[in-house]
Image (cartoon, rainbow, N blue to C red; front, side, top):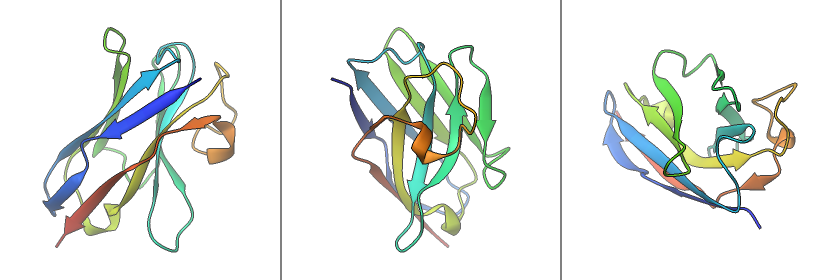
Length: 125
């Protein structure tokens, strides 16, 4: 059974930084594709970043140049470094794991099989 546990969320001012972590159990973070998604109130869940088994990454246009997805294979943990945060980044952030090595649409939620419980990020202006 795959378990994903996010941490690292919090409240920051605009321009600040946070690093989210996603500890995985029952799943090897380097074995297939993993992603970060976010969902603001009354909005659909949107893909933020993705990393595949080769280390290739994909980002949403809204976070390019500000967010970095990475993983630590020794700790079996996925990360999302978020810099220069904006109020519009406020959302619940989720990590997700896929069974496939390659995803046709890596920022689409339906491509993923397992989800964490989420961690809240709030950015004030």
